[in-house]
Length: 269
Ligand SMILES: NC(=O)c1ccc[n+]([C@@H]2O[C@H](COP(=O)([O-])OP(=O)(O)OC[C@H]3O[C@@H](n4cnc5c(N)ncnc54)[C@H](O)[C@@H]3O)[C@@H](O)[C@H]2O)c1
Image (cartoon, rainbow, N blue to C red; front, top):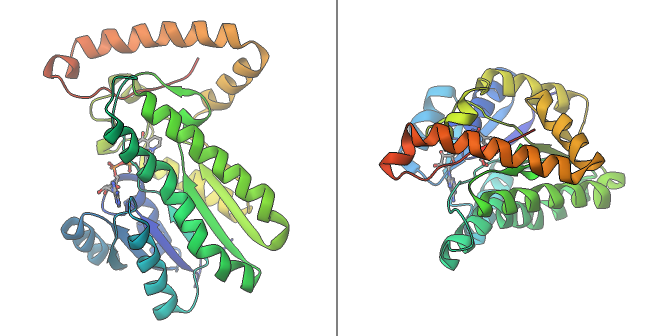
Protein backbone atom coordinates (compact mmCIF):
# COMPACT_ATOMS: atom_id res chain seq x y z
CA UNK A 1 0.00 0.00 0.00
CA UNK A 2 1.17 3.46 -0.94
CA UNK A 3 -0.04 5.83 1.78
CA UNK A 4 -0.51 8.91 -0.40
CA UNK A 5 -4.12 10.16 -0.19
CA UNK A 6 -5.14 7.15 1.91
CA UNK A 7 -7.41 7.55 4.92
CA UNK A 8 -5.68 6.07 7.95
CA UNK A 9 -6.64 5.76 11.60
CA UNK A 10 -4.08 5.23 14.37
CA UNK A 11 -5.07 4.39 17.95
CA UNK A 12 -2.71 5.09 20.83
CA UNK A 13 -1.53 8.15 18.89
CA UNK A 14 -0.65 10.40 21.83
CA UNK A 15 2.67 8.67 22.53
CA UNK A 16 5.39 6.32 21.34
CA UNK A 17 4.74 4.02 18.41
CA UNK A 18 1.28 5.38 17.57
CA UNK A 19 2.56 8.95 17.49
CA UNK A 20 5.52 7.96 15.31
CA UNK A 21 3.29 6.08 12.84
CA UNK A 22 0.75 8.92 12.66
CA UNK A 23 3.51 11.50 12.15
CA UNK A 24 5.07 9.56 9.27
CA UNK A 25 1.72 8.77 7.65
CA UNK A 26 0.98 12.52 7.46
CA UNK A 27 4.42 13.06 5.87
CA UNK A 28 3.63 10.33 3.34
CA UNK A 29 0.53 12.27 2.23
CA UNK A 30 -2.14 10.29 4.07
CA UNK A 31 -5.19 11.76 5.78
CA UNK A 32 -4.61 10.75 9.39
CA UNK A 33 -7.19 10.41 12.11
CA UNK A 34 -5.31 10.11 15.37
CA UNK A 35 -7.03 8.59 18.38
CA UNK A 36 -6.19 8.05 22.02
CA UNK A 37 -7.98 7.80 25.34
CA UNK A 38 -5.81 10.67 26.58
CA UNK A 39 -7.85 13.50 25.06
CA UNK A 40 -5.61 16.39 26.09
CA UNK A 41 -2.27 14.95 25.00
CA UNK A 42 -3.85 13.26 21.98
CA UNK A 43 -5.40 16.47 20.66
CA UNK A 44 -2.21 18.44 21.24
CA UNK A 45 0.01 15.93 19.43
CA UNK A 46 -2.48 15.55 16.59
CA UNK A 47 -2.50 19.30 16.06
CA UNK A 48 1.31 19.38 16.03
CA UNK A 49 1.56 16.72 13.32
CA UNK A 50 -1.40 17.82 11.17
CA UNK A 51 -3.85 15.03 12.00
CA UNK A 52 -7.49 15.16 13.07
CA UNK A 53 -8.09 13.83 16.59
CA UNK A 54 -10.93 11.68 17.93
CA UNK A 55 -10.94 10.52 21.57
CA UNK A 56 -11.55 6.80 22.09
CA UNK A 57 -10.86 4.25 24.80
CA UNK A 58 -10.13 1.07 22.83
CA UNK A 59 -11.11 -1.00 25.85
CA UNK A 60 -14.73 -0.01 25.10
CA UNK A 61 -16.46 -1.37 22.01
CA UNK A 62 -18.79 1.64 21.82
CA UNK A 63 -15.79 3.99 21.56
CA UNK A 64 -14.27 1.99 18.72
CA UNK A 65 -17.59 1.88 16.90
CA UNK A 66 -18.02 5.66 17.37
CA UNK A 67 -14.47 6.28 16.09
CA UNK A 68 -15.07 4.20 12.96
CA UNK A 69 -18.52 5.74 12.36
CA UNK A 70 -17.03 9.22 12.75
CA UNK A 71 -14.29 8.58 10.18
CA UNK A 72 -16.63 6.86 7.70
CA UNK A 73 -19.10 9.75 7.99
CA UNK A 74 -16.44 12.41 7.44
CA UNK A 75 -14.01 10.71 5.08
CA UNK A 76 -16.21 8.15 3.33
CA UNK A 77 -13.83 5.23 3.81
CA UNK A 78 -10.95 3.85 5.88
CA UNK A 79 -8.03 2.45 3.90
CA UNK A 80 -5.73 1.57 6.81
CA UNK A 81 -6.72 1.07 10.45
CA UNK A 82 -3.84 0.77 12.93
CA UNK A 83 -5.15 -0.86 16.07
CA UNK A 84 -2.09 0.07 18.08
CA UNK A 85 -3.02 1.19 21.60
CA UNK A 86 -1.90 -1.30 24.23
CA UNK A 87 -0.94 -1.59 27.87
CA UNK A 88 1.49 -3.62 29.95
CA UNK A 89 0.08 -4.50 33.37
CA UNK A 90 0.10 -7.43 35.80
CA UNK A 91 2.66 -10.07 36.66
CA UNK A 92 1.74 -13.68 37.53
CA UNK A 93 -1.40 -15.71 38.24
CA UNK A 94 -1.96 -13.66 41.40
CA UNK A 95 -2.79 -10.65 39.23
CA UNK A 96 -6.44 -9.75 40.02
CA UNK A 97 -9.12 -10.73 37.53
CA UNK A 98 -10.02 -7.11 36.95
CA UNK A 99 -6.47 -6.46 35.69
CA UNK A 100 -6.58 -9.56 33.44
CA UNK A 101 -9.93 -8.34 32.15
CA UNK A 102 -8.62 -4.83 31.47
CA UNK A 103 -5.55 -5.96 29.53
CA UNK A 104 -7.63 -8.49 27.61
CA UNK A 105 -10.03 -5.76 26.52
CA UNK A 106 -7.29 -3.31 25.54
CA UNK A 107 -4.75 -5.71 23.98
CA UNK A 108 -7.10 -8.26 22.39
CA UNK A 109 -10.76 -7.23 22.19
CA UNK A 110 -9.83 -3.84 20.72
CA UNK A 111 -8.63 -5.69 17.59
CA UNK A 112 -11.77 -7.85 17.55
CA UNK A 113 -14.07 -4.83 17.89
CA UNK A 114 -12.20 -2.88 15.22
CA UNK A 115 -12.49 -5.81 12.80
CA UNK A 116 -16.16 -6.29 13.70
CA UNK A 117 -17.04 -2.73 12.73
CA UNK A 118 -14.59 -2.27 9.84
CA UNK A 119 -14.95 -5.51 7.91
CA UNK A 120 -18.48 -4.91 6.58
CA UNK A 121 -17.27 -1.68 4.91
CA UNK A 122 -13.96 -3.07 3.74
CA UNK A 123 -15.52 -6.26 2.35
CA UNK A 124 -18.14 -4.23 0.49
CA UNK A 125 -15.36 -2.19 -1.14
CA UNK A 126 -13.23 -5.29 -1.64
CA UNK A 127 -10.23 -3.64 0.02
CA UNK A 128 -8.78 -2.40 3.28
CA UNK A 129 -5.71 -2.89 5.44
CA UNK A 130 -5.76 -3.78 9.15
CA UNK A 131 -2.51 -3.20 11.03
CA UNK A 132 -2.69 -4.69 14.51
CA UNK A 133 0.06 -4.02 17.03
CA UNK A 134 0.97 -7.17 18.95
CA UNK A 135 4.58 -7.58 20.09
CA UNK A 136 7.57 -9.92 19.88
CA UNK A 137 6.04 -11.11 23.17
CA UNK A 138 3.32 -12.68 21.01
CA UNK A 139 5.92 -14.78 19.18
CA UNK A 140 8.29 -15.41 22.10
CA UNK A 141 7.18 -14.27 25.55
CA UNK A 142 7.25 -11.49 28.13
CA UNK A 143 9.54 -12.33 31.00
CA UNK A 144 7.62 -10.76 33.88
CA UNK A 145 4.04 -10.10 32.83
CA UNK A 146 1.94 -13.17 32.07
CA UNK A 147 -1.08 -11.03 31.09
CA UNK A 148 1.07 -9.17 28.55
CA UNK A 149 2.52 -12.40 27.07
CA UNK A 150 -0.89 -14.06 26.89
CA UNK A 151 -2.73 -11.12 25.34
CA UNK A 152 -0.01 -10.48 22.77
CA UNK A 153 -0.07 -14.14 21.71
CA UNK A 154 -3.84 -13.76 21.33
CA UNK A 155 -3.44 -10.55 19.31
CA UNK A 156 -1.07 -12.30 16.90
CA UNK A 157 -3.40 -15.31 16.65
CA UNK A 158 -6.32 -13.04 15.78
CA UNK A 159 -4.32 -11.18 13.12
CA UNK A 160 -3.26 -14.51 11.56
CA UNK A 161 -6.88 -15.69 11.57
CA UNK A 162 -8.08 -12.51 9.86
CA UNK A 163 -5.36 -12.78 7.20
CA UNK A 164 -6.24 -16.40 6.47
CA UNK A 165 -9.99 -15.84 6.44
CA UNK A 166 -10.23 -12.57 4.49
CA UNK A 167 -6.97 -12.49 2.51
CA UNK A 168 -8.68 -13.73 -0.66
CA UNK A 169 -11.42 -11.09 -0.37
CA UNK A 170 -9.20 -8.01 -0.66
CA UNK A 171 -8.48 -7.54 3.03
CA UNK A 172 -4.84 -7.14 3.95
CA UNK A 173 -3.61 -7.69 7.48
CA UNK A 174 -0.29 -6.77 9.08
CA UNK A 175 0.89 -7.54 12.58
CA UNK A 176 3.46 -5.38 14.31
CA UNK A 177 5.70 -7.51 16.55
CA UNK A 178 8.53 -5.31 17.84
CA UNK A 179 10.99 -6.09 20.60
CA UNK A 180 12.12 -3.06 22.60
CA UNK A 181 11.30 0.32 21.09
CA UNK A 182 12.23 3.57 22.85
CA UNK A 183 8.89 4.76 24.20
CA UNK A 184 7.55 5.46 27.70
CA UNK A 185 6.38 1.83 27.82
CA UNK A 186 9.90 0.48 28.37
CA UNK A 187 10.98 3.00 30.99
CA UNK A 188 10.97 0.28 33.68
CA UNK A 189 12.43 -2.49 31.51
CA UNK A 190 16.23 -2.20 31.53
CA UNK A 191 16.74 -5.46 29.64
CA UNK A 192 14.68 -4.13 26.74
CA UNK A 193 16.51 -0.83 26.83
CA UNK A 194 19.79 -2.66 26.15
CA UNK A 195 18.69 -3.46 22.59
CA UNK A 196 15.83 -1.01 22.03
CA UNK A 197 15.48 0.62 18.62
CA UNK A 198 14.11 4.08 17.92
CA UNK A 199 10.59 4.65 16.67
CA UNK A 200 12.21 5.79 13.37
CA UNK A 201 13.55 2.27 12.84
CA UNK A 202 10.14 0.80 13.62
CA UNK A 203 8.39 3.19 11.23
CA UNK A 204 10.79 2.31 8.38
CA UNK A 205 10.19 -1.43 8.90
CA UNK A 206 6.44 -0.81 9.01
CA UNK A 207 6.41 1.18 5.77
CA UNK A 208 8.53 -1.48 4.06
CA UNK A 209 6.00 -4.18 4.95
CA UNK A 210 2.94 -2.03 4.14
CA UNK A 211 4.37 -1.13 0.71
CA UNK A 212 4.81 -4.86 0.01
CA UNK A 213 1.28 -5.64 1.33
CA UNK A 214 2.98 -7.94 3.85
CA UNK A 215 1.97 -9.40 7.21
CA UNK A 216 4.75 -9.60 9.77
CA UNK A 217 6.64 -6.53 10.98
CA UNK A 218 9.61 -7.09 13.30
CA UNK A 219 12.35 -4.80 14.54
CA UNK A 220 15.05 -7.25 15.71
CA UNK A 221 16.66 -10.31 14.07
CA UNK A 222 16.46 -12.03 17.45
CA UNK A 223 12.67 -12.33 17.21
CA UNK A 224 12.62 -14.80 14.33
CA UNK A 225 15.83 -16.47 15.51
CA UNK A 226 14.12 -17.11 18.84
CA UNK A 227 11.04 -18.37 17.00
CA UNK A 228 13.25 -20.84 15.10
CA UNK A 229 14.86 -22.07 18.33
CA UNK A 230 11.41 -22.53 19.85
CA UNK A 231 10.21 -24.54 16.83
CA UNK A 232 13.34 -26.68 16.75
CA UNK A 233 13.68 -27.43 20.45
CA UNK A 234 11.17 -26.08 22.98
CA UNK A 235 13.29 -27.29 25.91
CA UNK A 236 16.33 -25.40 24.68
CA UNK A 237 14.26 -22.27 24.15
CA UNK A 238 12.70 -22.46 27.65
CA UNK A 239 16.12 -22.90 29.19
CA UNK A 240 17.44 -19.83 27.33
CA UNK A 241 14.44 -17.83 28.48
CA UNK A 242 15.00 -18.85 32.12
CA UNK A 243 18.58 -17.65 31.78
CA UNK A 244 17.40 -14.37 30.27
CA UNK A 245 14.82 -13.91 33.02
CA UNK A 246 17.58 -14.20 35.64
CA UNK A 247 19.51 -11.51 33.79
CA UNK A 248 16.41 -9.29 33.57
CA UNK A 249 15.75 -9.72 37.30
CA UNK A 250 19.34 -8.82 38.15
CA UNK A 251 19.06 -5.63 36.09
CA UNK A 252 15.80 -4.75 37.79
CA UNK A 253 17.34 -5.34 41.22
CA UNK A 254 19.70 -2.51 40.43
CA UNK A 255 16.96 -0.07 39.46
CA UNK A 256 13.23 0.17 39.07
CA UNK A 257 12.42 -2.99 41.03
CA UNK A 258 13.51 -1.33 44.23
CA UNK A 259 10.94 1.38 43.65
CA UNK A 260 8.24 -1.25 43.37
CA UNK A 261 7.39 -0.35 39.80
CA UNK A 262 5.86 -2.97 37.56
CA UNK A 263 8.66 -4.63 35.60
CA UNK A 264 8.11 -5.31 31.94
CA UNK A 265 10.50 -7.10 29.66
CA UNK A 266 10.10 -9.02 26.46
CA UNK A 267 12.61 -11.74 26.06
CA UNK A 268 14.36 -13.62 23.34
CA UNK A 269 17.05 -16.29 23.26
N1 LIG B 1 7.61 0.05 23.21
C1 LIG B 1 7.88 -1.23 23.04
O1 LIG B 1 9.01 -1.69 23.31
C2 LIG B 1 6.84 -2.16 22.50
C3 LIG B 1 7.25 -3.44 22.10
C4 LIG B 1 6.29 -4.31 21.58
C5 LIG B 1 4.98 -3.91 21.44
N2 LIG B 1 4.60 -2.66 21.85
C6 LIG B 1 3.19 -2.30 21.68
O2 LIG B 1 3.09 -1.10 20.93
C7 LIG B 1 1.88 -0.43 21.27
C8 LIG B 1 2.20 1.02 21.59
O3 LIG B 1 3.06 1.05 22.71
P1 LIG B 1 4.06 2.25 23.00
O4 LIG B 1 5.37 1.66 23.28
O5 LIG B 1 3.92 3.29 21.97
O6 LIG B 1 3.46 2.73 24.41
P2 LIG B 1 3.15 4.17 24.99
O7 LIG B 1 2.78 3.90 26.40
O8 LIG B 1 4.22 5.13 24.65
O9 LIG B 1 1.84 4.64 24.17
C9 LIG B 1 0.62 3.98 24.31
C10 LIG B 1 -0.49 4.95 23.95
O10 LIG B 1 -1.72 4.20 24.01
C11 LIG B 1 -2.68 4.94 24.73
N3 LIG B 1 -3.63 4.04 25.36
C12 LIG B 1 -3.42 3.18 26.38
N4 LIG B 1 -4.55 2.54 26.68
C13 LIG B 1 -5.50 3.01 25.81
C14 LIG B 1 -6.88 2.74 25.64
N5 LIG B 1 -7.55 1.89 26.43
N6 LIG B 1 -7.53 3.40 24.65
C15 LIG B 1 -6.89 4.28 23.85
N7 LIG B 1 -5.60 4.59 24.01
C16 LIG B 1 -4.91 3.96 24.97
C17 LIG B 1 -1.87 5.74 25.77
O11 LIG B 1 -2.61 6.89 26.23
C18 LIG B 1 -0.61 6.10 24.96
O12 LIG B 1 -0.79 7.32 24.28
C19 LIG B 1 1.27 -1.21 22.43
O13 LIG B 1 0.28 -2.08 21.92
C20 LIG B 1 2.46 -2.02 22.96
O14 LIG B 1 2.04 -3.18 23.63
C21 LIG B 1 5.50 -1.78 22.37
